[in-house]
Image (cartoon, rainbow, N blue to C red; front, side, top):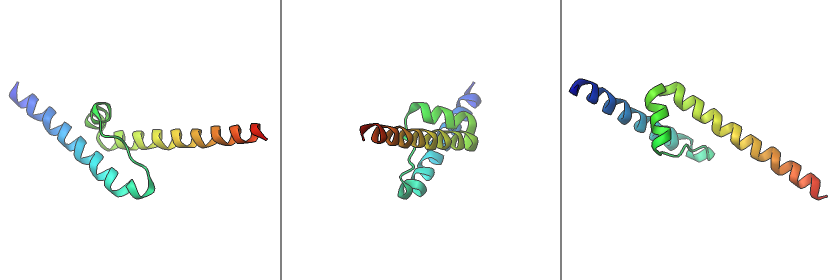
Length: 77
């Protein structure tokens, strides 16, 4: 029981460190993943593929926002 708890705590700490390192290096590009319970759980479960998935989701969300703003600006003309 204690061994399982330590493994879970280790995965959570590694997930938090991975998110912090990602945010540190890519903050200059304004690509930051918020560090909250949901992102920590995703990164703890999936490690590096979790960060890649979250960053792809972030880029997709940013791209959709840009497309929506372009359509809004076109319709105002």
